[in-house]
Length: 213
Image (cartoon, rainbow, N blue to C red):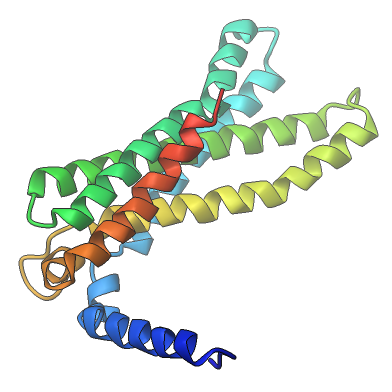
């Protein structure tokens, strides 16, 4: 990368050399050993499918089942507030783990909070998919509403992607007994850089949460 100002270019080269030196230990083995993508898809399946079926069964047999009660439960499950708060708390714990990688209590807490946040996200995903299906099955629903909700499909894909990121961060918090892992490599990195990363990982979600009404 070329800069018009020599001083800026010198600073850029110094920063790049600094980052290359500090992040030498973060190779593919370190960043991917703990990641269990197969487990993520299993959890996704076992949460999405039952949630989806609950919505469909409630729609098809609304004359038999307690419709109002079940619809209230579905609405509470779709609401993103619990997922948001849990996710922010989990990211704060990840940030603290970056600063204090030897504190197993913090890393274990981050793992469990994020994996449970992932499960809540999968539950919401199944409920939303079920709600979309029932609207398309409802002949009384106006066409504009169906078209609008069809566009939400892209948002669902984004939700799955972000949820997978939470699962990935959770598994970075696992301390391997053998081989390399993130938590064993972090103490070798400059504390100033770790604090900066922690502020990004945990600080930005806090700001987002504080701006919510």
